[in-house]
Length: 88
Image (cartoon, rainbow, N blue to C red; front, side):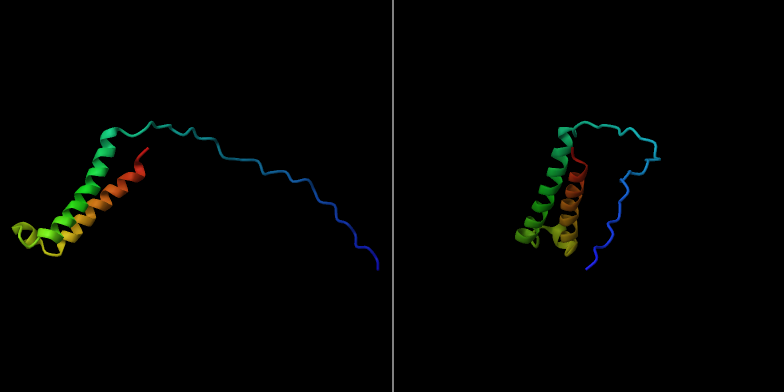
């Protein structure tokens, strides 16, 4: 059986980068108060939901809010969670 031809491969040369380099602004760590705020928001949301479950019908303004208590509690927790993405 005849042997097939061996093809010669060209040497790989990476393409030239045509973009101009941009200096990235280095930022330091977050302020400790930022950590306290996002942890406080998450805990406040959790506390809001727990109080709603345990005593929501006995607290007048929470009873007036009805199902909006869930929206308030989860909004507080999600706001705190979203703040963690900017934490350094």
